[in-house]
Image (cartoon, rainbow, N blue to C red; front, side):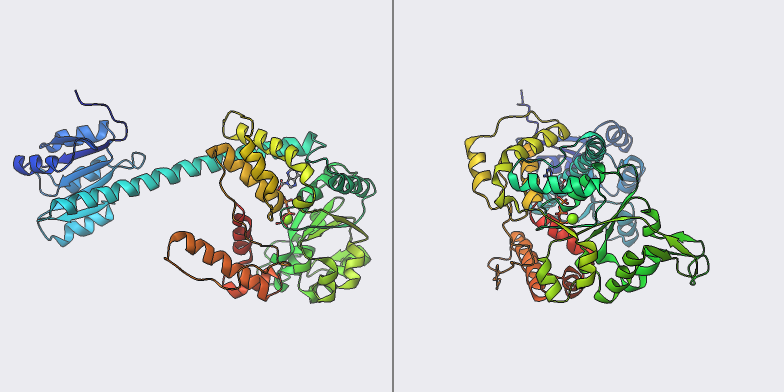
Length: 466
Ligand SMILES: Nc1ncnc2c1ncn2[C@@H]1O[C@H](COP(=O)(O)OP(=O)(O)OP(=O)(O)O)[C@@H](O)[C@H]1O
Ligand SMILES: [Mg+2]
């Protein structure tokens, strides 16, 4: 009896010529493939409907119907079966139809065994990639749902949302509590991934404005043309596309908090307009003369060195005084290594639950790695590291690119060796680094230089440490 091998690929062959059918099936080594065959079109339809095969090989010309008819009748997106059509005729119409109905490949007679096997192996590989993609998508959807629930639950109840008990973090949290209590405008500074946005939300849930709106704005996305209409809103008819009146973000945030994320990316000429609103505490919608009183607490963040940003003209000094009467500095993870243990347990709990994995204690090897790694991407990099560990059970080395725009001296040159995909990734990040360096960390200009959107660049940067 044949040994059962779950990795064997299932091949199904349909040909009404007995000799070719036998020839075809003999091409497949029984050790690697499980082959089923039929010479009847009706039987083929029945078997394809009721079974799942990796590859279905069909001759174009069959008795009663064509291989294409069978494919059309039995195709099921969920099964991912790859259809290989074999034809001895150069029939353009059949080729066009084959492409239209999603035949995976066509093999023209005469072909040799090598061509047959390599085509089949190629299709098996494509199918495997498709299966992996589907699995990833499912993981992502699940992750998204659990994260949403987790975040909601945490924001509602959890005072210890910012994990860590290092003196530096405790200082920041104490300051944040006062800021929350007295609704003070506050500038949160820190390298990428140190938790600036999380701290802003912490301030909200711990403060007088916890039941009022929290409105985050990515300042780098505020172009000159969007600035006023987005922030102050507009009246119907104020400009060509203003079909309805629209409240701006200041109005939406009224009574609550406006979080100006990456404030140093607001073009300098627009910073003056923002300053005026903060001073007068009033706005006017575009197209209206009516003044609306505004009461918002302004939290802002930047990952630039704030004094350098002012000196180099990225932030107006007067605006800085308005938004930064209090500054909270979130230290990089390497300067609060005491937090690593708590964070490791926190993320392990979170991700093991998320991916239905058992919580196993970290080995010495893992702790060694955790304690000695630089964590340039800070908590975001660390969280991704633990997530990978929970899923794969091994250390996946995080890429140690220096992505902080202010200390970006890595890799002044990049040399291709073998042209592998890994190198392509490296080249991508080298180019990003170079652009950031050229524009002194200004992501808007770097993105423009690279020919991608600001959001595209932000996405790539966040994934560097993944
Ligand atoms: N103390 C902490 N405890 C638990 N999770 C944290 C902590 N600090 C940050 N995180 C998590 O790390 C990730 C990065 O945090 P966040 O987005 O707030 O960083 P950021 O400083 O705003 O980064 P960037 O400058 O790149 O926008 C988030 O998933 C956040 O939930
Ligand atoms: Mg942020």
